[in-house]
Image (tube, rainbow, N blue to C red; front, side):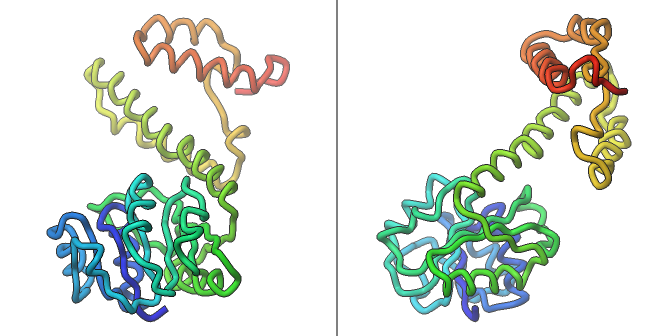
Length: 259
């Protein structure tokens, strides 16, 4: 893959652009806001930026659509099939978004939490890929392996299930930390007191399965402590605490509980 165009300048596009620029020529950056396209292009030494899909570089080897999920189909509809490899980066959208619109196409989903303000090192990020045909899959794998040591072929259904799992593992977990921060703030306590506990909880997953590393009052069926905690909470915090506690207890019957 010699020449690549990146369509997008947001969270995923930013880290992809930085990662790919070290291995191939990023010929152009597109963004609806030209200032964003220019800023990313300048950051990676790309010579061209545009906010007009009709001005996309016509002779790139690959076009990577890294925009929000509900805008992917609009980009496909607004751009012609020029015989290149067209790729989207969504975890939840299927490969067949391209069907009938492109002759060679694929998906490369980097399963990571990205932020435009922080460029991620892609080497350890898992890329989940699929493509329209064997030749396109080979090209796509080569593109991903240039930046990552973990490239895995999956179909659209598997990728959607991975996306669901990632929401539980990342987005919902982060929301739990948000609720914990609010509880601590109400008590005049800093959130950084949680950091050793959070770090240890994550580190244990390198040695134990999530179910094996579960601790707390719910898995012990300590209803007195659970009830006490519920009495200290209200609104959605109370509902979430109760729901999660019940879920933990349901998966860990009393005769199998452990501390």
